[in-house]
Image (cartoon, rainbow, N blue to C red; front, top):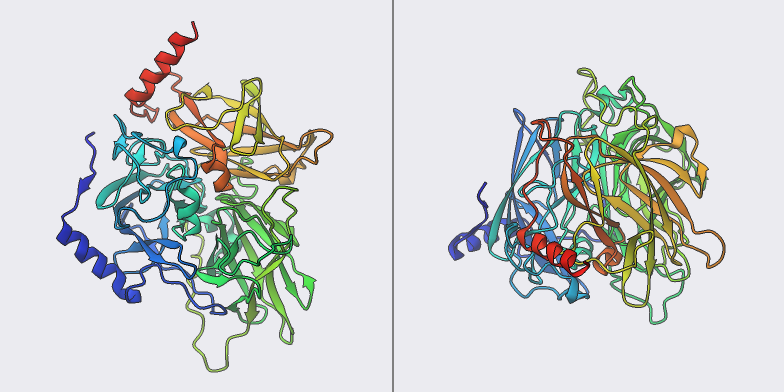
Length: 563
């Protein structure tokens, strides 16, 4: 298939820029004032199996002078929530309107995506304003115009067409989209260019959510606007925001959320922060409240056990790593409650980790008397059977191979390394660090050999959490997820670790990446490529394009040099 990228005319770009900026004056990447009331993002729904969206990638100056970034819909609204159903197609036309020269070059320029498009997908060389899109958590192919981030570059003034085909057995739940240009990921995500993606139908898996008002809560972070002269562990490495409402230091003025007393709601919570780990808790008059967990990382809890029906887990706090998602049922505060606060608790990220102190996110207030009822969307009634189970039998599957990987770092770079290999920072033209075969499962033990937290994430697939520090996780907590937190190493004793069952049984083959989802760690080298080879030439495999010719030639040269 030929590349569908094209260069727009100057007149067309000017028209688009004027149209998308009109909703917020000239401030395309609008932010609400502190203390505002949380509103749901705009919802866009597929029709007849297709959702077509026209996005522009834009920038505005932030309050501290740093550029903010955003994806703007054709009606001028930022970061809408994209709704599809299993088996649907998302057609997303993305135009990059960020002027050339905006932003800073990657902090590790030797690792930037230069000439990543050679024989690949999109422009041939990245710039400081380049963009692409990753559809995080989705089990879609890593091919050009779907979810390929190794070779896809969209530069200023260019339009690129994505046509993402969701499998019929995609679990219904919360996913998200964000830029994945290596070296610029932190700046783009902290700039605000993130949004939610929902695969609809969760009510058919867990009927408990049917009929409940639905909220999409997107937590983002950004560099502190008013950093203290001498930061302490109680000062955050990044300010937070809730649906573009800043919750910044030093006062941490929370946002507001309106909710009727005793009302049940279904909250879809996305931690789209670049570096901030959340440990969420809901407190009424200081007492932690139960959080009824319905889904994690897009997969309904308990839904892969053979019946297709979901269950729930209840806890009084919930740790969500950067990129993680949780979908929960909450009950509003009883009448007469004096304080109702949704907070993130302090997270100890280690001696060299980014401080994540306790902070409020929002306070819950009752609607003012005489105001209109909530305009929240409502989860539909049960309408059919659940989709086929994508990860059924994963707990019982016999792994074809066991591997050990480890996180480490030094004063310059961050690494994720296969045990026995020498740590080296990721390069965009690297050959795969791991090669496996479609149809198998593997057990990976990931160790953290550094004195700060890291977050393991892999594209295209999910994994089952089996054990922590060699101790089997209780069956109820062996959930299928795509991102997992690894606590820091104390400096003595065994390395903290998790054991994960990686699921390569699906149809997807090709090259994709795994990395730490603390994005400044990824940008500084903590990423690697895995290649899933097809088990046969059967037509059921979602074959990918051949490897980038430039990469193939480099692999061949390295092979010759080793012999």
